Length: 424
Image (cartoon, rainbow, N blue to C red; front, side, top):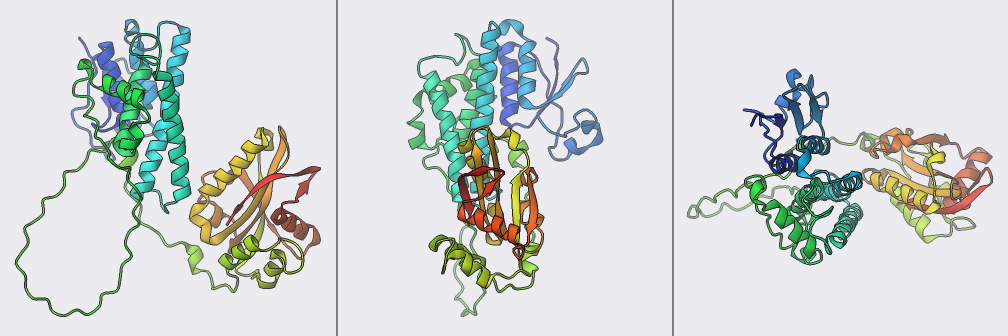
């Protein structure tokens, strides 16, 4: 059987395993490159000329057809075996296969990766609330998959499809990372399905056995360096036996998790002149006092605010036409605030949803370190979806806006405050 082409991947890459499994089930012969060094060969012009994003998995067909992105390649390989049933037996089944593949990748595997990044320290700083959010999303996906497979042998129809292969691979990766013994007991049918698939005789050598994680790993903060203290000269001790290095566990997705960490750079905001305004004291005052009125939080703010060291900004979501239900818009604010976690010690925020369903906007106010908003808010990937304009509270209108945003009674163009969140 002649080869259909070459698959560029690494042994531990989960999406590469899915493609190889599809090829094995469909009886499609594929080649692997004779030599490939990730993060080196994929940066060379001969690779990027074919695959401009420099990403694996990548497919180079014998017919000169080039393709990247794992799900697209897996689906294409399945079309080379039309009698395999891997894409379903009719248009409805084909749509269901795509549905389950997309859910498993977008809802299960992405959150598995994010959890791994957090607990490994790749995403810094670590945030327990963000960790819990990723875990809740991962669990929700697992429950949806478990409910569906609990009354079936396969996810679509009566035969193995691309959906089964993809889900089995992503479930195995989740189990290898953070789905521990207790969590496995809540998804027995999904575990059964995954183990059945990856142990198919046709897939021998593609998937390794699934390790059992007794207890989900947790984030361990790095120890702070302590100054060395003079010590008494120790009495010479007998040499200890040399410890053998622990075997390295294969990375389940080398393309995603093998990214070299960038050296930590000191935040330039820390080099600003010392301010008399203590942001943490303000956050406590805001939390413990009434916002308006004598002795209130705003009175405390004006008494202590340092306009040289801090600035006040109005923030507005640029695309209000995209907003639908107000509770969803409020969740969007929560997500934006979560992504600002790295700037917590430089920032306070009060933002809200104004208006009604399908006719609302998001607006509010920020108090931040320095005189420019971007260095503080650009830690959030979606910061450019918002506009930022500096407020001068010596002007009545701008002062009124600021106070109303903090008091949660802001009104804009007849749209009244419905709900909101604080970043503190």
